[in-house]
Image 1 (cartoon, rainbow, N blue to C red):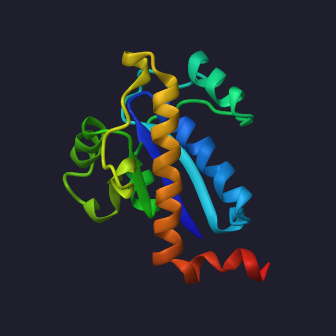
Image 2 (spheres, rainbow, N blue to C red):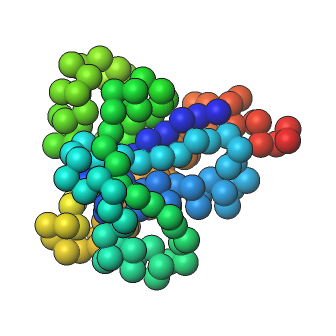
Image 3 (cartoon, one colour):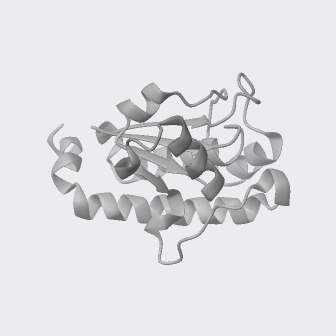
Length: 161
């Protein structure tokens, strides 16, 4: 099983969108049994809150069901996940600070897997949830393609069950 956690600041916009979108993508590809997918925020500022309404509307627009309550990232999350996928450089810095630089080999910006590496702009600031959705979708699809190349043996679990 491949354990993936998506991380942003508050865990109410980008990281839950990525969690929900990636779950949908792996489900569509018949790979759901091969993954454990979650999300968290580097801050506790939104802990206990649901997905931010504009992010929720964007997910609903694309027919993506969801249930989510924001929570803060812990060091245990970092230790127990194979991939920690952050949304931007600030999140990357916060996660590396939390770990004192340990585990850096499994911490990536989500869009580093794309042909256009970039931060996923924070729609909380920009208001552009459609651009965030597009960036996250690109990152999730490219990340899965990366895993299909690099971890094909681990992804065969779904085919056997």
